[in-house]
Structure formats: C-alpha cells, structure tokens
Amino acid sequence: MEKEIEPIKECSQAILAIHDVMDLLSGKWKVSIIACLCYQKMRYSELLREVKGISGRMLSRELKELEINHLITRTVLDTQPVTVEYEITEYGSTLKNLTSTMAEWGMTHRRKIIGK
Image 1 (tube, rainbow, N blue to C red):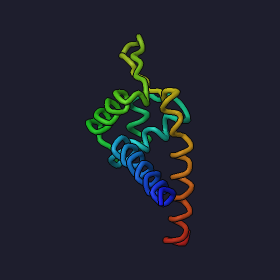
Image 2: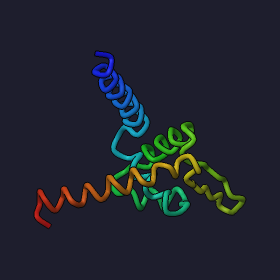
Image 3: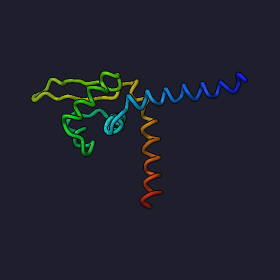
Image 4: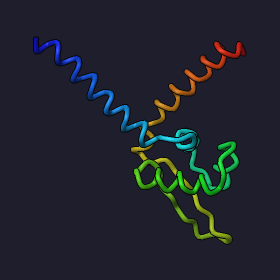
C-alpha cells in the first residue's frame, strides 16, 4: 500500500514546484524578458522595443522583480546620459531550456491551430 502513496506524494511535490515557477514567472511579460536576456545583455530601451506591447512602467516593475529573484542583474554604466544594462544571471540562465521549450511548443501549437 505504501508504494501507491509514493506516486501521489511525488505528484504533489511536482505540482507545488510548478506553482512556485508559475508564481515567479507570473504575468505576460517576465518569460519574454528572460527569453530576450538569455541571448544577450540589453539596455532598458532595447528591451522596451523588443518586448512588443509592454509599457515602460510595467517593464520597470518586471525588471525589479526579476532582479529581486536573482534572475537578472542591473548594471548602471558611467556614460552620458546614464545607460542601464540588464543581463541574465547564471541562475537565471537555467531558464533558457524552459523558454526554448515553450517557444517550440508555441510555434507547433500556432501551426496546428492557425495552420501556418
């Protein structure tokens, strides 16, 4: 009987871990920001241009949350005017496989539903 409980416990732990990820990456923008930064460091204005539809205020908020969670770093460069660059951390780069898998699945799903 104990062997039947183990898969349920394992499933519960997996669901809890998935909820943690969903809470961390909640919203419409964080995954897109992380995906951009997995390929190269970017300035604030580049991210604003690349992440279509995000407002400046929302980008600032999302970047702060990602920095708090140690997924990105913020570097202020000594330039005129001041330039701020964002870069994925080593810890944050562990999400690259996740974002790639999501992108591949999304393209497959789009082709299936839309037929393109």
